[in-house]
Amino acid sequence: MTAGHPHETARDVMHPGAMCLPEHETLDRAAQMMRDHGVGALPVCGQDDRIMGIITDRDIVIKCVAQGHDPTSTRAADLVTGLVSVTPDTPIQEALDQMERHQIKRLPVVESDHVVGMISEADLARHLPDDQLADFVHRVYAKG
Image (spheres, rainbow, N blue to C red):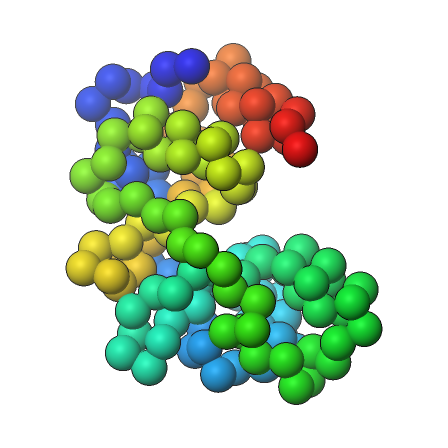
């Protein structure tokens, strides 16, 4: 699969800026922040503001609520697992390959361990030709 313009980078496609959810914040607060900002994922950052991973609305439902845990006492850090990210200068094709390989729909763009943006399906929809977007969606959703 090839993406839009061959020289596009993550910086060209990403939504700049991303509010970081502090690692100590509870999942009910994370859900409220997602609602208030109209997003389905938030980067989780440690006390030094360095990204640890991301948490999605689906993570809250599947890994907390459905498991019988209390979202008012479960911390964001309790759900964060390995971080998959790219730098602003990563070629967009490499970012798409990472998303496909890890079956993720949102990808943090990180510089010096700090979040500078996020790439989501909506961002891809604005930048990729329809056939390439359809191919990406098929590859990410068809596996697993």
